[in-house]
Image (cartoon, rainbow, N blue to C red; front, side):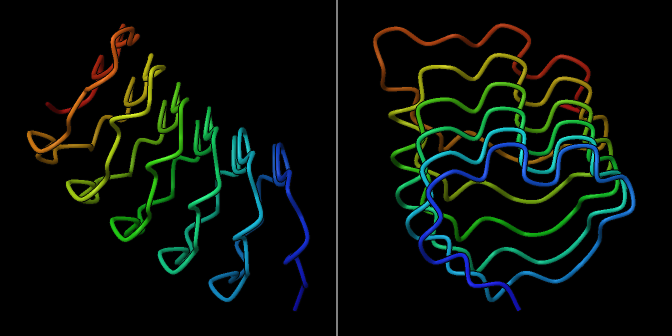
Length: 145
């Protein structure tokens, strides 16, 4: 059991950890601000992290990019402070979970968020793209939407 309660940066924590698939649902990540590339290329990772408090996270860029086994609920996450979700699920070919409760109104970089997330087929009509400058290029390219 790792105590990560004082950690603020988890960037690339499990990057390229091809066989990593350990439970971490009890982690206290409430002080983390950067989760970019955290599970990028973690091909085997498919554990529940829905209980994480991500209120202070500002970047989730490429967090699950190419994590092609990951398919866990995350609709409980409060992502209101996240500004970049660029490539977050890019290549996460198994991911198909509801995200309709997410408040993405402060996210300005959603470039390629679901690019090549070939299983993703969820309703995002509740999402409010409320920012003046927002990058949606390749947002759903290669998804099932």
